[in-house]
Length: 270
Ligand SMILES: NC(=O)c1ccc[n+]([C@@H]2O[C@H](COP(=O)([O-])OP(=O)(O)OC[C@H]3O[C@@H](n4cnc5c(N)ncnc54)[C@H](O)[C@@H]3O)[C@@H](O)[C@H]2O)c1
Image (cartoon, rainbow, N blue to C red; front, side, top):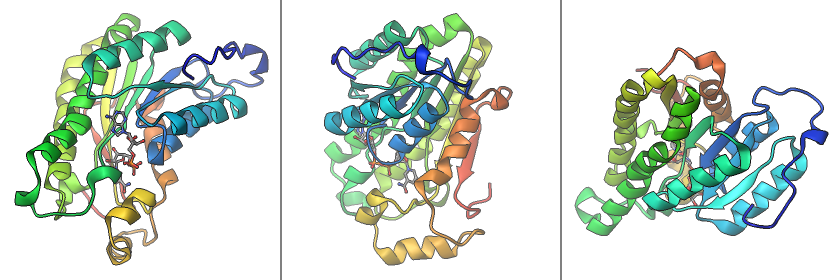
């Protein structure tokens, strides 16, 4: 929600205690694609969800939809994660509205907008910088923005979205692959630094999801090939990622940090 003046006190509607009741989650890149599925799952499980994205109409409409259908208070906050000050303002807004930030899902990325595959030496400097700015620097900004609040409450769950391409490589997207490998390194570094504040930092590395973005970026044959390589030989759905993200956001993973959970139907075995 951005200033629509909607009543956010929904305690009267809460009928049962859900897994994330009373918790506040930020999902970056939550307006569309897989991020929207994480936002929906967290809200359905009772969390107040801040959908942080640059796609305002989609974000507003999802927030309204979740607000209407779930017990949590969902809001949309238009924020470009490449802008440090904007992420600080976003975190302040979330705390002013909900009182805490318990979960941060760093999902925003240049993926759909990568455009067509191209050899590594044909990627422009601008394209390279953009992918790194959103996919890596954006995570750094968002973690910096939420850290003061999580440190104060001595509790926090940070989940960074990487990709199996960090393990397998992938031709045609050198900047994207490099960025997703950096997410794993950053996750490990932050886990070491934030652990003393009782904050866990983990990553999820999804396999190739058969969603709109992947279909635009890859030929159908490529998706079929990925399916064949899985231990569980079927198309991967966006929903296949929800269990891993919710586990890493829940107290069930309180003693797990710095890890990358590969969710790809058993293709890559690290
Ligand atoms: N789809 C797949 O097969 C797949 C596989 C592995 C990993 N992933 C990762 O999962 C995540 C979601 O994937 P997707 O398929 O939904 O991708 P997508 O490109 O469809 O969605 C990305 C979202 O991030 C938002 N975003 C982009 N730049 C932003 C910025 N500067 N500030 C804030 N928000 C911004 C977009 O508006 C969009 O809502 C990404 O991190 C992606 O790299 C996807």
